[in-house]
Amino acid sequence: MVYTIENIKHVLNLSADILINSKERLTQLDSNAGDGDLGISMEKGASALKAEVAAYTGEDIGELFIRCGMAFNRVAPSTMGTLLSGSIMALGRKHRGSKEMDDNAAIQAPRIMAEAIMNLGKGRLGDKTILDALIPLAEAIESSFESTPDIRLAMKTAAHAAEKAANETRGMLARVGRTKWIAERTKDHPDGGAVLCSIIAQALASAN
Image (cartoon, rainbow, N blue to C red):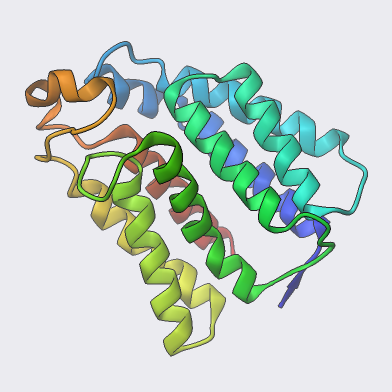
């Protein structure tokens, strides 16, 4: 399947709407780890992203990703905002100059985003971060698509893997970021970033 700029805009808008609609849930999750600003931060970033998508009239998919990442970071310069915006811009650098994406490019996107987040945040699998859902998602979507080149099936498989992995962050101790200082306090709660990843994956899989 070939994805044009309009397809990419649709996915970005859908992802942004999911973040906005999940504000209360993300706020509650984040309140277990500190100031509870995750929901508000993601709502601001998502709203800025939607505005950028609406304003962009070009055909360069990479440029759109970069503009969206920059817009997100301007209004949501929190830790998660910085990580997400950096991962979006990493997709932009990968696809700069491209007017289309195919299924293989779409399958690679979670891996590109995970690597960008690892480089920016210095976290790894098992540190109780968004990576604990994003990396299993990336592995699942790649494995599924390699076995059966059906992107819809691959996305559903990946969404299930992300949900399971996000749930499994309950009981883990945070090893990076501010939450490592209150690791025992947050131990019995799932990681907000991992749940965020799972929510988006499930919604995109259902919409596809």
